[in-house]
Image 1 (cartoon, helix red, strand yellow):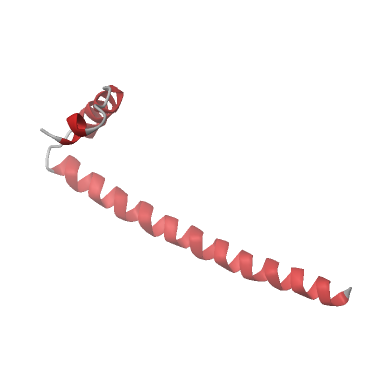
Image 2 (cartoon, rainbow, N blue to C red; image 1 turned 60 degrees about the vertical axis):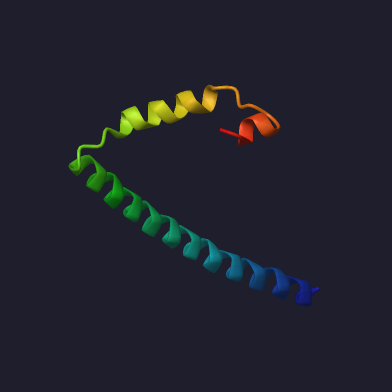
Length: 71
């Protein structure tokens, strides 16, 4: 039984470290995204308009088969 306890404690320790690393990675990714957003805004890009345009395109029905692949 103590073997199982050790196994589960070790697993929790490993998973906790992996979770910390994942959180660190998400924070770095968020910082990079914010930097790019700021740069685009500084260049005059309207990100809200771009997002609306992307949403409208996503709503349009897509052609299936070859019709959807050929311009």
